[in-house]
Length: 551
Image (cartoon, rainbow, N blue to C red):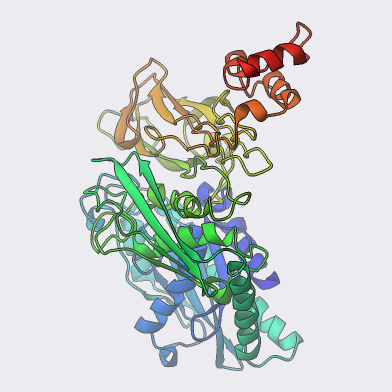
């Protein structure tokens, strides 16, 4: 764990792109020579971590171990072998001790731009979306593959950032390699096989024991979401028993013609993460902890997208899957499963200065802002406001955004009444206003959901507020697709809130009064949803509240 945590920090400290450096859109891990993950850094996103757990095995299928040499580093961004879309680069470096292969280290991070249509969902296939690199040598014997680097830089609107991020990924592997060798020397370990087998066995046993505490059976759940060209139904059937869980997405909608489709590796990553939050979350993430979980889906459905359908925005649906699978367990495990949350991060790729409508002196930029909504209320606790669950990707900072692009953030604040009312209130979303600092038009690539269908409350809790994209002048924008923000206009986006848990009228009146005083709920919601009446001094009028709640 010490090795991989230092490995992750090396990547974040040296990365050029703000989404990596500031928001932590990464993963880092150590593997045995068979590609089994022994440890992963505690920072990072499940879409990178749990896909990386399988990616290393794909490298071993293409690049035999006997051909690996000290100083080699391999790379791919193949969505079906890596982490689901072209913008994520996965690197693998073999580790040698006394010239003997003893393990592998790997890391993943997000690159801002790889040509094509960019990070929007409008591609007709994966080839529209950018440059695809199969598993190949990025570094051979310590020498960078300059031809590959030149191709990557030539196919990007942000070549400087991409080059820096690739060197940061290499440095991340180098740090892990060095620290792993030092650790093995310190403890006199010549092979990771024995400690790896122990990690696998203990982690799997603990996970299986946790699963066996739940009642065996098959449980189902369905969820409607916005989609793009059509509304999408996500259907899941979860079978639990004998220390194992299988999730089957049979019955889910078919693939879209737009880039919101999800490769099965990414769907598996988030589905399993949701389940790991319930079953033995204290067990470190590794091959053993992941082994009892299996995810299946018919080829061609929205969460098992076949090559080469477009997948640039696979995270929109992928990050909703923890809510889908946990919904299967809500009745089986009462008191353990939260209400639905906003779930999919409000990922806003913005680009300016490349369009013919821009003036000659307009600054060219391509950034990807990540912001979050509220989580669902939990049994016994309110939901968390503006929190990156399940992605783990921190919200983009105002100062960093303004220092890396010609943008001005006019407003960023919690969104009153966005958390679903309940005995335990859903977490709040936020309101953010952005405009061009140069008065230039810029492009928004809409990549959000929960605009039509909100996060649902449970056990009497109310739904969270829906998300919204709009211009300050009042025009509503679509949740998905490329749209231009005209010169002089302000983009206003509101992230969704989480669903409430339990009857709102059973919430303690004092807590409701505190929420009102803090601006988290309005005076209208105070009475309408919670049935709480206040005195002129702001304290709770208990007699009036009792009458209101009975009416």
